[in-house]
Amino acid sequence: MRRFLLALMLLSFAASLGAQVVICESPQGLYRECRVSTFGIPFLISELSEGRCVEGVTWGSVSTGVVWVEGGCRGRFGVRR
Image (cartoon, rainbow, N blue to C red; front, top):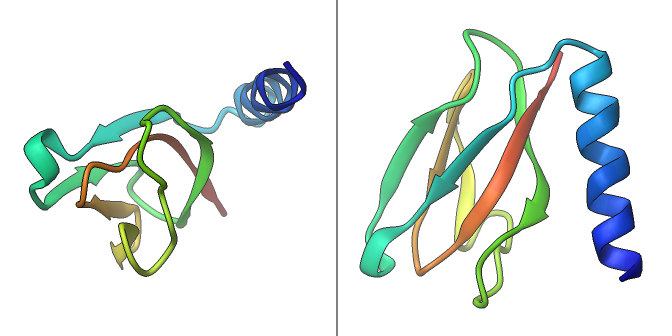
């Protein structure tokens, strides 16, 4: 419950900044890239997968505004400007 409330607060904060929030997922454990914004550094708002989303291992940033996921990571991502 505590984790859910924290995720909800982070989503509200991101929305209040006008930040884009994107769900990016790794279907069947495969590598995938998702555009989060045109600029900024992606960050994980909350995990949606049962497997862990670990920065640099199962998710990361390939370039400004683009996040990658693999290994079953599924998460909600935002952007720091």
